Image 1 (cartoon, rainbow, N blue to C red):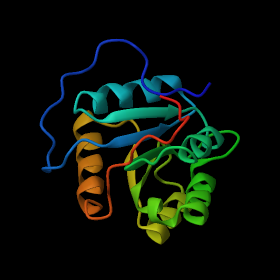
Image 2 (image 1 turned 180 degrees about the horizontal axis):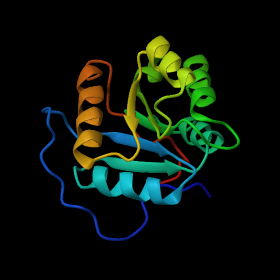
Image 3 (image 1 turned 120 degrees about the horizontal axis):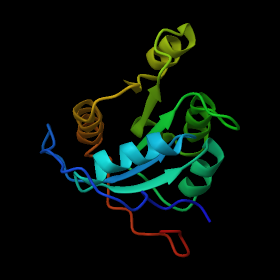
Image 4 (image 1 turned 90 degrees about the vertical axis):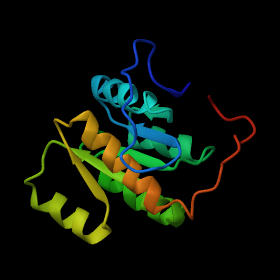
Amino acid sequence: MLPAGCSEGPVLQGVPLPVAVAAGRVLIVDDEAEVRDTLCEILEGDGHRIATAASGREALERMSTEAYDVILTDLRMPDLDGRALYREIERRWPERAAGVVFITGDTLAPALRELAGESGRRVIEKPFLPAEVRRVIAEVMASRKDALKPFPPTQGSAR
């Protein structure tokens, strides 16, 4: 069973989104449970529907049955890292690639600068501030608002 959402626990009180945008579906991909949980708390407080995956492979499985408005993915993960996940999303679902946001603690790496520049994707640096996460998610969703349509749950999908 894939993780469908955030762990139980207190949710941080959300502050208003910095850009007028409706809450959306967000997939959080990170091999560190603590990072996933923190991002869940931040985004659930703003009304987003959250799903999580502990690896790039799990994310692809979830994406095969559900569509997400934003995919937050760590760059450094075992199995299938964020760069490979992004490339696979581009290959399978090119229209979804614009919703990818990278998360990393390795902002000085030349490969990261190259990937961010080449892909045009946003990068959130660890350690991140809740306001920064909210701002980036709101901006990505606002930039995609014309392309985003409500996605009904796919039959047999995990919740």
